[in-house]
Image 1 (cartoon, rainbow, N blue to C red):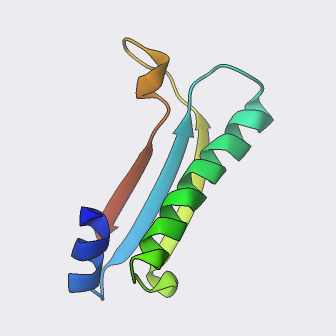
Image 2 (cartoon, helix red, strand yellow):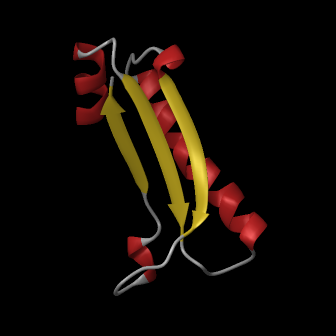
Length: 81
């Protein structure tokens, strides 16, 4: 996982993991789904050796998409100080 390697080589930078969902389903279900997506990535980063104290995660719920719902079903990893 390239993000884990980057995070480990920059241990002072914070990592923000943001989960998203498509608009299908209820608002609450999409928030939970986006949080779960983010948590899975956080777990993967931790398993790869990234210190958990530097990782923050959040689920944003549903977002609109341009062409297909697949665009909205994603996780973004932001690394910065």
